[in-house]
Length: 121
Image 1 (cartoon, rainbow, N blue to C red):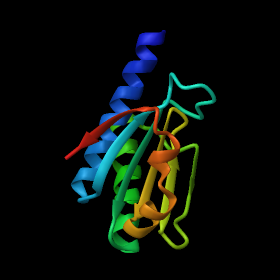
Image 2 (cartoon, one colour):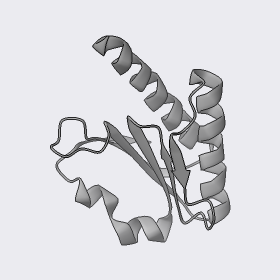
Image 3 (spheres, rainbow, N blue to C red):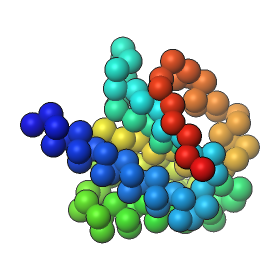
């Protein structure tokens, strides 16, 4: 059972990274939180874009691609009202899509500095 769950999580993870890349999201990183104490999920995926329009487009593309590939819908989503920080919560993976200056302001990666991080170009 453990393997299948990891496999499903990996498929979801790769699908999200691809969807962000397709819409030219910047600074894409994945933080592996699963082994940390008090972890809220297995992974955070974080990226940014320069406008609220692009933030919304990235979030919409993730929703579409994930449903298409895995039939999963987010457990929760938020931030669409102003699209300065959109969160898509897929339970094991939480996606954070920031407008550039807000990512710099919140410094989410620094809160989880001890997590293993992977950067995507």
